[in-house]
Amino acid sequence: MGDALMGRIAVASIIQETNTFSPQPSTLDDFVAQGYWRGVEAADRSAGTNTEIAGAIAHVHRSGHQPVPIVRAWAMSGGVLTARAFAVLRGQLFDGLIGAGPLDALVLCLHGALVAEGEPAADAVLAETARAALRPGTPVIVTHDLHANLTGRIVAAADALVGFHTYPHIDQGDTGRRGAVLAVDLLAGRKRPGTVLAKRPLLIPAEAQAIADPPMGALRRLADEATVGPILDVSLFPVQPWLDVPELGFGVTVTHDGDEAAARAVADRIAGAAWAARESFAVHPVPVDDAVAAIRPGRGPVLLVQSADSPTAGATADSAVVVAALLKRAGEIRAVATLVDAPAVDACHRAGIGGLVNTPIGATLDRRWSEPVRVTGTVTRLAADPVVLTGDSMTGQTVALGRWAVLDTGSGLGLLLTERPAPTFDPAGYRHAGLEPADVDAVLVRSATMYRAGFAGQYAEAVLLDLPGASTPRLDYLTFQHAPRPLFPLDPGPLQGGEDG
Image 1: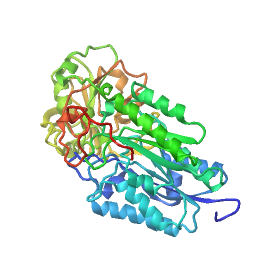
Image 2: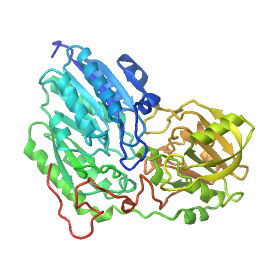
Image 3: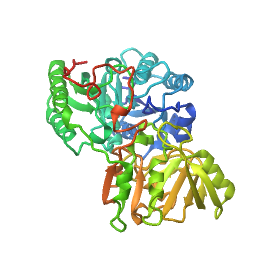
Image 4: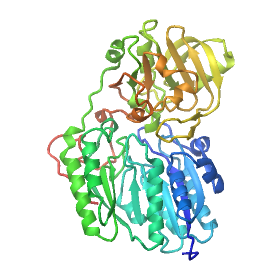
């Protein structure tokens, strides 16, 4: 250790989830818009938020060590990251670690499902880049999102790896803390952690991955029960399923204190339990017209879950299918909806508050799944400020919308039009714009499961919609070209349970 009493523990965070079915590439601008901070700024602007970097830094402080913030780069989920942007982020990580002086450990916060042009395992490359910048033997502890796609390469690059234990994700900060605990214990000589991985050829719709529901709840209980003695952590990685890459599948990591054989037995047992339960991970979406037709006024808000076009899953959030269905009930029900449409936002800003706008909306970024819908309405609000998340997930984090506008159709439908996607898993996404979800009969939510935390106790019913899209719950709507086959449920017939990684 650099100091007999105090270690210098670096903390870095580069996080984005990739959807390889999205037509929109992710760029460095996507990180800059949402928060690309270096050094002390990364620590100061993350402090108090429910994020991995904040949790890690806080624990290092509490433990009497010196946190050394390197970089915080976060972007909303999106398409494949450009090679140029990835090179910049890699360079920032490498240069930041080199320039930080002697370091005793690194807590590296990554999503685990980042894909860059030409690099399907981009998170592993980042971990390897960090290794190359550090003195030989410097411990690297990696944290991952539950939706990470684990590979042998990332496990080999880390001394230990831990992931979220919740979905909806509400333990980002605690996951950062757990990563920092391992780093501190390792420096103190209390632990010598290692991590093993087991995988199965299994994809699960994100809508079936909530930890509160079976069978994921049962798997999480098995993981918790196994975390005793030399078993320090068991993390489940059901993977986000809109990822067409090699080594795709359900993963289980077990972090141990020197007993690799016991860890492998636990990983294999829990991965086997997931495989045995594979038929139970079914979802039952409802046709959108049926869902909208069933809404009755005055019963409390019904959440129309358009997870097929979820921006937090990397889709473009510009499908107008649900808006079209809501317009069919104009004057009968009250509803709020949002979508990304930069030209429509521009039209609203040119018209000004109180102006009347007649414009097509939707399908400006991805025309595969919907057509534009023409709407007429009065502009009631214009701004360009970000949303501050208030729910249990990523609490306190800001999300940039670009310029945005609220359009009142005069028939009970309020539209939030944005240049960047609004985070509708948190009601703050609407409330920030002056639209109150509690006051309407229907709320469009572009989220698979995260809304269950953000809207907890604030809705009468949630209806999963049967729609195609880049993040659809119907995986049979998508064409996988690079994922290993056979892969359940894409391939019919008997399958083997796969091998440990």
